[in-house]
Image (cartoon, rainbow, N blue to C red; front, side):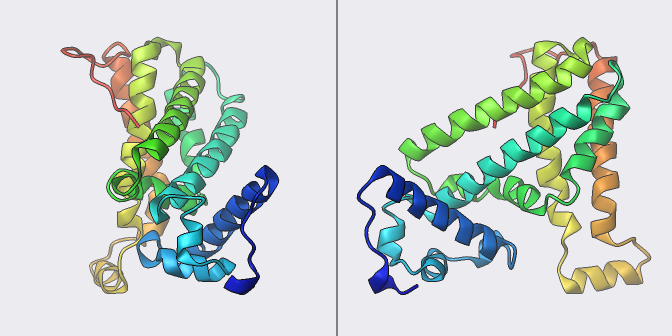
Length: 231
């Protein structure tokens, strides 16, 4: 589709169609390369829009990727809810296993989580930030509620802290699971297992340790200031 044939949306359903097209193009490009390698101009070219026209629907490249992140986040929570239904109450290892298993293969979610705070939230308007952070808070609270349902001893504050810790652990592990070819070669020479294969096991271990540690300390994070991780 050429730029000249792409008509400006004038009705709500047309606006929604344009936004859907933009998000679809973003998803397709993210399947081909990383966030850092995609420019707004390339994204606009993919769907036949001028760069300035893309900005009529999303105020930045980063806002587009955060919108994709929100969709992926909700889809993951649906899978978590289904998986946790089979976990006995009071089983932190089971909860950690479900979370790690449902994240395995969700490369787009993990990559966007890893880029969220350090990259994507650095170039958005306050208006979009208000919208995105409200949705992020709702997703965070949903995860905390799902985990607390299986592990009531965590308490509200402890479950909320763990919900944020999940994303910190993902963001920390994901870059190491995708080293450059040079680093991967050297790591293999040193006898290290393939980084990608270690991601799920390391993620499960990190989540289990976080849960067991919190439960051993009585569930809730310790004062002062009621420590919390806000997303």
